[in-house]
Length: 460
Image (tube, rainbow, N blue to C red; front, side, top):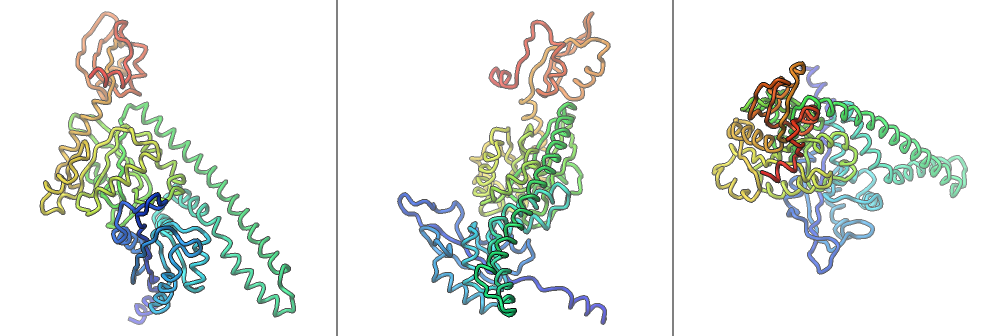
C-alpha cells in the first residue's frame, strides 16, 4: 500500500488549459472572412485536441473581431479579462484556436504572466504529433515542423535568459546596458544557427526517406498491384477501416491524430484482384502549411495512389465541413484529380442512417458503411473493383510461348476478355493497369495501337 501511494504521488497532474477563439465579423471588403465552422464548434475540436495532448480544459471564451489587434491579437480589454480568469483559475496554458505571430505570443505572455504559457493551434498540433510519431520517419517529420515553427519564436526565450544574466551582472558590479545585451544576442544567433543546421540535416535525412519510399512505390507499380490510399479527417475511422478490411492491427483510439505513420496492407477484392491499401495521416481544418510540407514524404503515398477512399464520419455534426477541409488539403498537395470514393463511415451510430446519408448525397460516388460492424463493406469492395477496372487500359497482345510468365501476370493482374493460341504465341485481349501494360508494349498486335487511360475513358 505504501509503495502504491508513493507511485501516485509521483504522477504529475495534467496542466490546466483555457481556450480562446475568434469569430470574424463579416464586413465589406474585409480581409478576414467568417470561418466555415462556427467558433464554438471549432473550439470544441480544439478542446479535443487539448485532451489528446493530455491537458485539462477548464474554460473557454470567444471574441468577435474585424481584424487582429496589432499587439495582442485579441482586443486588449479581452486580453486583460482573460488574464484575470487565468490568475483566478490557476491556468497553466492559454491556447488560441488561430495561428499567432511570434509578436502576438510575446505580448500575450506579458499580459497573462510569466508562468503562463501561450500556445496556438499549430503549436498544440505539433505537440500531439510529437507524442504520436513512433517511427523514425514520423519523428523526423515532426522534428522538422517543430524547429521551423520555433525558429522565429526564439527571441522571447533568449530575452528572458538575457534578463537573468543582466540581474546577475548587476550583482557583480556590471553596468549592464549594451555589455549585457550583446552576449544575449550572440547566444540567440548561435542558437538560431544550430537550429538552421539541424533543419538542413533533417531535410537531407527526409530526402533519403523520400527516395526510399519512391523506390518502394516503383517496385509496387512494377508488380502491377493497384494502390488505394485512405484519406480523411482525423478520427473519421481510417485505421478501423484498414483493420477490418485487411485484418491488420493498426493502433486505433477515439482521439484526434491517433496514428501518424502510414501503414500498407494487401486486400483481395471480390473478383480476386489484389490491391495495396494504405492508411495515411488524418487531415484537420486549419492544418498548418508547415506540417503539410514536413509530411511531404508521407503525403506522396496519397499523391501516387490509383484511387482514394475519402473516409467521412457521417455521424459528426460537421461532417460536410470536415469533408470540405479534406478536399482543400488534397487540392493543396496536388491530389485533387485522383479518382475518389467517398466512404460515409460510422452509420451504426445513427438512428436514421438513410436520412443522414441523404444529407450528404450531393457528395459524388458515395458508399455508406460501418468500419466497426462491417455494414456495407461488401458493397464498398465491389465499388473499389469497379472504379479500378474503369481506370485500366485495353490491350491486345500476342505473347511468345517462351514468355509464359507474362501470360501468368496477365491472368493474375488483368481482366481477360479473350484468349486464343496462335502459331507465334498466346493472344490475349483484355485490360491491365496502365503501368503494368508497359511490360506488354513490345507484344501488341499490329492492328492494336497503344491506348492510354484517357483514350479508353473517352471511348467508353
